Image 1 (cartoon, rainbow, N blue to C red):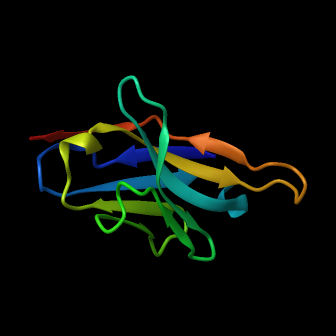
Image 2 (tube, rainbow, N blue to C red; image 1 turned 45 degrees about the vertical axis):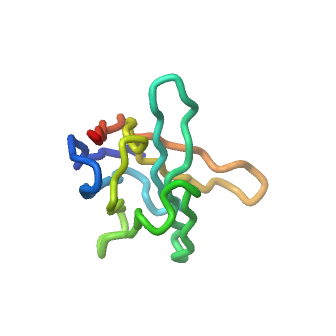
Length: 120
């Protein structure tokens, strides 16, 4: 599975950005896709995740501001980020969870990351 992100950039506090992620390869076994972020000196953290059944999960710091969605093509996932804050500044990574067997853990695939910078 290969993941390619786009849509990062620079924005003023309170602004919006939309990230896109395109998955290719053996996408039929992807059970969930999501976004994680990592700021300098910090651990990578969950931003949002969407299961193929539609269930969504958000990190506490982005609830009510960010929305994850899947495109009409099942290989696309989007992250709409509104009311951005300087603390949202990070590299954002697209993630795909690849299902193998019911007893084995999923395999995580990652994109190369896209920088989001929010100025105060």
